[in-house]
Image 1 (cartoon, helix red, strand yellow):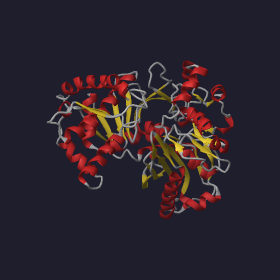
Image 2: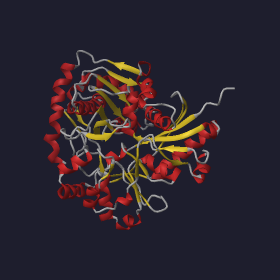
Image 3: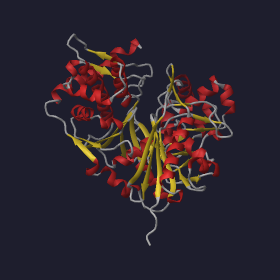
Length: 496
């Protein structure tokens, strides 16, 4: 008699939602669920309550274990947002909200750390430049500005998914991809840098144990099993940060292959054999496959611009936010938006400029400017930022894929192809792919596969992608506009 099908419960703890998917041993999704989570804004601060991550995870888990006997779920694994500061007390409860990656409040602390260690020394150790969005300066900020909270802090975590791992297993863990964004990990050695932690004045004991994505963190504790429906002792694997999972899902492996992510924030990523240290603005991460690195150009503004447009139109019309309304408006627009340009820095930016004070703005309005012009110009502005990101990476683009929720906006995909002058392969259901890709880490850890690539190759196959080719007449339109776009921030930065 054939054995029962076994599943991996894989999750992606993103900025706007927690997504879960049950994946069988062949990588096929069997059940999927997504639950939105709120972001808390206080002035320029951006935070989330870790309890919202756990509540969403628990609800999805109970739905999965109601559909399938818990004994058929043989492991859990996750991806999640990176570069957060998540302080926990001795009982592994949050001492405050998580400070998100897009929060740049710790710029003064970053400047002091650079003065103490030297910016080039920090770059050599971590593979990345130091700024106020990194968790290590944020921890310094917490110590200086909230000493009572810092005094209660016994652990810190760097990725949202690691809070769920702690609740499930009792272990404070971090994977080497997500922890590459902490500003405190030696990128080559894959360990915390005592030199940097000493200069920051923080204890190494606060930092999580480091794991490779496929390594087992622990088993589900009895109390977590009761809360979520899993069997006690079910293996939980470290998983990886969202950039690691998305890059793996996109199938990029060679020079000239790039993955564009259009989530709430976004990035352009390439895979290489080493960190790229010569270009400012490029983030370097340890990849899931051993000995490989992800070179990332990160953007704070991507899908949030699309969401802002949708919400703005709903306010004007008095109706509910409707992405279909925006899509219909974009269909009325023309390439170039009548000469209107949009600087998309709604929440500041870290690339193509590192400027937490930058803001969005329209340039070139006339009495003939239409609502369709304004909508299209905003999405073109994000596309121009992405073009700047591609130009910072080494090899000329040969293959560009697009993953993330922004890929559901058909006109935006076409805009990207036209602005980049390259065919774009857009994943059909990119929102679930990070969770599906990270399932490979659990299968590798269980010994059911021998390498990541064999499992994930089908995710980036032609049947899962829709091609968007650049239209030949758009190059003449977007070339001059792009050059104007590049001059906007230098001309306006003194106004912020």
